[in-house]
Image (cartoon, rainbow, N blue to C red; front, top):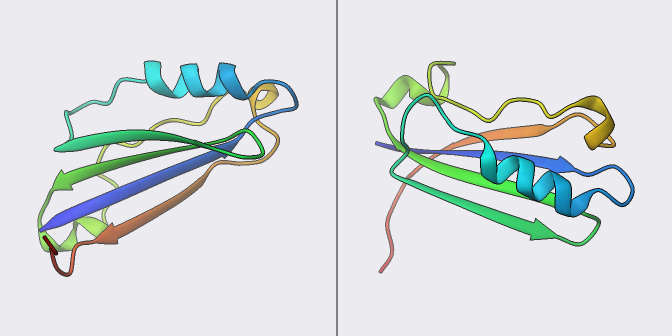
Length: 90
């Protein structure tokens, strides 16, 4: 089963580029199948990682996730979501 972890943070005023670089530098304890980093209006940064994991992994904390950035780098707490793959469309 594939599990996608989504990590989204909103940068403090004027610190969007710094948050983006911080997120790119973060190493995980294991290598995901895929990792993508996105930037959105409002200096938001989104990182999605894809993992090959057992069915119950969406509920378990063992999958590596990006940490919380320093409080002065963000304007609110990080948002996190976990999704499991239901189908693949080509």
